[in-house]
Image 1: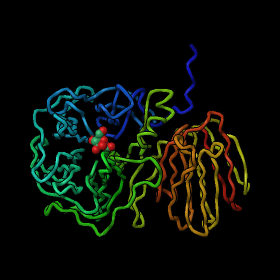
Image 2: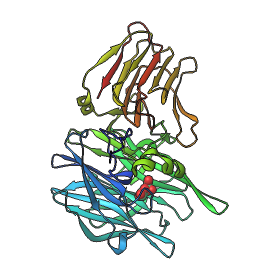
Image 3: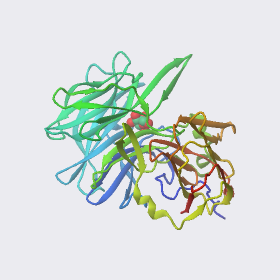
Image 4: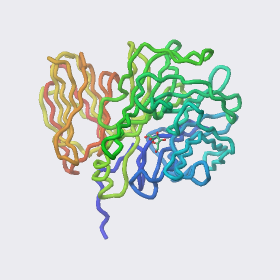
Length: 450
Ligand code: FRU
C-alpha cells in the first residue's frame, strides 16, 4: 500500500509520532545533552491519559524521540503524570511532576520526585508534597530552581476562595519541602497553571503564569486560559514577589501555552511552549489528527532577554544551520515560489513607517502592517469554520520581520523579538506561492529554503 504523504509533518519542531502532546516538561541541559520532556498521551489523541515523553538533542534543532520516560504506575500518580520541571544536582537529574489522582470523581494532587543519573532510567522517590490546607486540589506544575541559600519550588494553585495563586516552597536537600506562603495571587483568575520564575537581569525577575477561568455554564464547565508574564522582583528574604505591572501576553498568535524556561550552559535563558490553544472541536478536526492520528507540537526554543523595558524572545541562533541557501528580493512588489513548506523569511526595514503585506502559501497565512494605525495583523484560515480569523498587535514601527515555517507551523518574530505570533496552519502541499508588496528602495527580503 502506498503511504499517504503527510504535508503537515514538521522537520525541526518536536511533535509526537502518535497520540497527543501538550506542555513541555523538565527542560534541561544535562551532561552535554538537551533533554526536553513533554506531556504525552501515547494511546490516543485526547486528554484522558498523561505521562512524560522524552526527546533529546545536541543542538535543539535535530531531535531524537525516546518515547516514554515517566508513566503513571503508583497510587500517587495513577491518573496522570502531569507537568513539572528539572534541575541538576550532584550530577543527577531531579525531576518534579504532579501526580494526579481521581477517586470517586474527586481530584487529589501530589508533587512527586523522580531522579535519574543517566537520563534514561528514572527512579521515583517516596517523598511527595501534599496540598497545603489553604488550597483546593487544583494544585500542580512544580517549577524548581536554586536560590542563594536554598532550593525554591513554585506550584500553580487555586485558593479555597477559588482564586488563582502561585504557592512557594523551600528545601535544603531537594527531597523534603516546606510550604512557605502565597507568592502571587493578583489577576490570576480562578487557577494558575504552569508558573515559572526567572531572573532576567540583576534588577528584574519575570513571573510566567497561565491564568485559567473556570465558569459553570448550565450543566457544563467552560475553561479558558492564556499565557502571560509579569516583570517584578523576587525577594528571597521576605519570600515575596513585588510588581507594579499588569499581566502581559507572552505571545500574540493563536497557539501558545504552558511555556517553561531553562538556563543552558552558555547562560542563555530559553523558553519553549506548547504550540496549541485549540478548542476540542479544533483538536478533533485537526488534519494531523484526522488523517495521521497525532496532535500538537512544541514551539521553537527562544532566548529570553530584557531590552528597552521589554521582554524579548529571539529564535536560537542554532536555527541558522537549517539555511540551505539564500535568495534575495528587492522589487517593491513580487511573487515567488517556495521550494517547500520549510523555510525562513527575514526582512529588515529602513522605512519603518510604511505599509507592508505578505501572503504566504497561497494566502494560508497573511501578514499585514498598517502604518497609519500602527497595527500588525496576522490572518489564517480556520480548519473547522473555514473562515478567516486574525490576531493583531500595536506595533509603532515595523523594523524587522523574521518568520519560520515548518509545513504546518509559523512563528513570526517582530522587531527582533518584541512581539511573536505563533500558530498552526493547514494548507495544501502545492500551496507554495508567496506574494508581497510594500518593499521600499534599499530594502531586501531574504528567503532561506530549508
Ligand atoms: C496545562 C496543563 C497543566 C497540567 C497538564 C496536564 O496545559 O493543564 O496544568 O499539568 O496540562 O496535561
